[in-house]
Length: 171
Image (cartoon, rainbow, N blue to C red; front, side, top):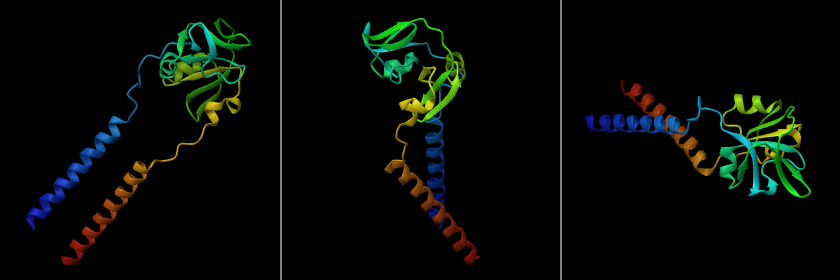
């Protein structure tokens, strides 16, 4: 009986430590970090198309997002023209702040977007989030591994309840 208790204690401790590391290693490590540089991200050096801009709108992207898209980063706001992308100065107004796909905030200036959200990826000038493709991307659905973790947690709860009720019935 003592061996079973030791195995149970070891198993519970192992699972708690594992869940602790799972939760805290997936938390956002960039909280409190300096906001990234923002500017113009194009598909080709010196031109191409603006990465992240919706249609013919102008936009700013974070340097981190641009690097993850294998784009070329330059200072300024990106404009899609008939001759390709142009990076330059422009009067920015309010627009759509894309923090991540399907997580967008409307009516923000570029300073508000990147200043308040260090993880923001794109700011689309003078555009509503309804018209920005990144705000209407396919919804994230839990993968099989997520469902497996959820099912495993439910199984552990059921086994725990069963063990507690069995011990109470024996006493």
